[in-house]
Length: 489
Image (tube, rainbow, N blue to C red; front, side, top):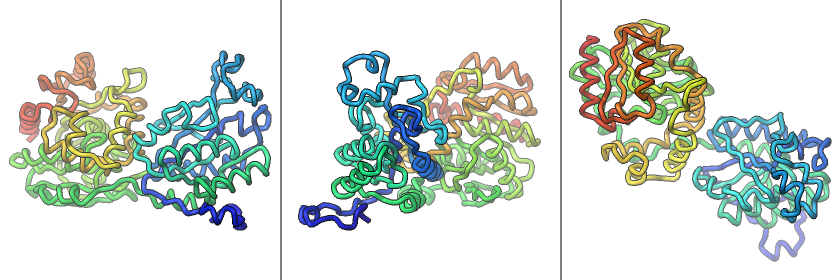
């Protein structure tokens, strides 16, 4: 609906005011809701309490739906703020207060920037001018930009105009945009609605965000399940429905397989099918991946509770836990709290508070996720994972889009905030620790510490393998796993 329903005949005759298509891959761009704009005590500020409140609701809904949130801020170096190099500051000298590191450029405290949210620093009105915002939106797979912030007649308008000119359908949320005076605010929204964007109400914007489910699977991915010699089983962990691939045989010793941070259950098929002669593999779609539900919580405690739910819900008697990467951390947490027949941990992230960071950055994971959501293929996957077997590259291409963005971001954050060594010394024997000889995740020093902190564990190096030991060196890694499992039977 237009901002002003009395658009005059000049605009009508010019053919302005058509509706903007709303895509399935939105991104939320929050323009300059820093203290220098939202608090009247600053020279450039005004009381934008209502607009910040509306924006907080948009941010919360975006996070629930795994929609990217991008904040922008104007920030000048001392040389720029005090000098004459920025032409805009000659026209608007009050903006010189927006100095880097100052309270004026800090995000309004009523909003929250989380790990996984992006921040774009700018020198001019448009968040696109002189920044990497267009490339960032493209890398995230966005097709629609939802804009809010301050000021409506300045930075919001300039950002919305450049958003359209960068190829993105654009929505501007009326109640989440603020200005220093009503006249410029109304005029800017009128012009944006007529020529560049759809100006929509907060309820419409929230409904649009709420209907987005960016975890997608195409028909080729679902068809992969037809080639998997396993039965789908379902278990509830509280409100979360969990999907498990059960490879049988039904009378075999259960082996609950817990994959890594971006690995749906089907991607462990090539491992599971090689174990059915000695155990009964059951591969879990960890919450937020594959066919399992997403959730609010992605911490180790919640993941371990899911393990309990699967074991109890499927009546698995005296199972073995086997986890790779994130899954190894989950197995350690679960085994530290409840006895199992045994555990096998494959290359668990040893990062944590006061330790070296996890070697793959969150941005790298999210960039690969964006590729998957826009549509990728095995050749593109191979650029990131050149050593993998071709079928595994194909499965990655088809299934990665089933992973929740918030699950990846929260788990990656957990790699830094939750210490593996809080659980590892409590994991009882028998337990086996497999690691790649060339892994950047379990280094030689890390393996030595793991051996020292749990002397009853048996450590097995997979020569030449990186972190993805079963993908990098399938024969050697599977051989080591089979040897460990035989000792646990």
